Length: 207
Image (cartoon, rainbow, N blue to C red; front, side, top):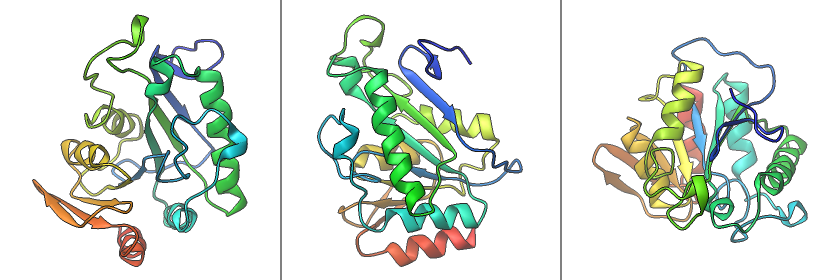
């Protein structure tokens, strides 16, 4: 993996960071989670770690994945970097704070992927419809390749339809949408996180 400015950048607009020392046998499913608006309360383009607050109910979901040997993987679009609102240094500080807040509730993330490519960006980050940017499935596929995951059995939690679409395109068949409505999207069954938290926990336990 190429390093740039001390950060785990696989390419200029793609952060890929393996966390902790947990190992997983090939063929395990994963729990994919968006970050802003899903793990932490969305503050727009977050660049201040002091403003980070976890969403209710999300830490127990990640803890359940930890307990049952399921990799917990963050997949986050970060167009604020492309737009010049902040840099990877601010992303690192905010992300570190989110991980600290989760750890305080005994919940741990195994991998973080973040995509900074966006058509409104500048320089090498100014790419329209980059394959790593959700709703494209690139981040999920990259995690699957690196960890040898069974994507079809994996689950995704997000706050936007783009998260669900990325899951569908990666071959997942179940997703939970924060504050969204239950639906079926071309083979992906989407449940409402706010009303089906127990269903998500049961799904994690059954993997």
